[in-house]
Image 1 (cartoon, rainbow, N blue to C red):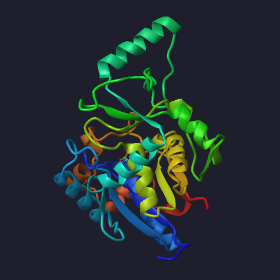
Image 2: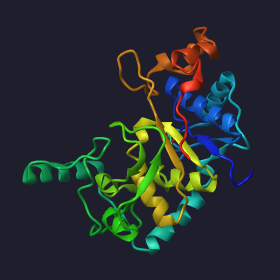
Image 3: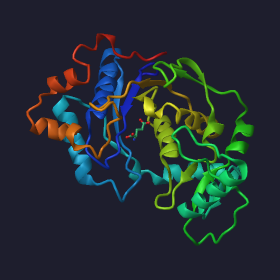
Length: 296
Ligand code: GLU
């Protein structure tokens, strides 16, 4: 690998079967790597050890092979790297940017309702979930199950705003070019869950850095998460990749595909007689000359 070589990745969670939306992401990343003389890495985001399984991972590898996608180097599994995430958490804890929380889901719901009653409304994050209504003043028994949250206000104060990322695709509102991060919109995000010693946000930024990923090309549904990723990169001194958030493949009903919709799983389409070429035509990648190009 040379310093100037672009590094792309596809990072599915093996907690269900791949669908057409995953095929789109995987093909675009693979082909961008090929076209630019770069590398294409495969990463299993399997931090949820309850819902992810080796069988589901095997299914994903089979689907990718069927599509003609080849990855460089070994597959990285997040479940084999909990130490990396722990070390980052310890660094953030040492800086006083992380706090423990014992509140259950139902306690959080009640707190949100109380705030709504008191204030008339309570802010939602970009995914539509209420912001965490608690604070770092919470106390509890460290031996009892708890999660770790980022103190977003302090994190923002530490890194200083504004912060930007380079967007080579587009956000839901057409945002492109340098995009100003808005991490406050997420509140105190979870960095380590009760059931697993990390979170999506934490592991994705650490792995992208450890794997030397230069271009994160992923679905537009993750556009707003990038604001959190920018904060963590800045706090942990990690390089910032370029980002491309691409169109989502929608179902016939115009809604986002999900792993629970069997009709669009690659396996069921394959079993129904679809060829890899049919898949490409279905998702508009038969002639990929005009597909998203990465910035930078
Ligand atoms: N693991 C995430 C997913 O399957 C993708 C993460 C990313 O591309 O940043 O939706």
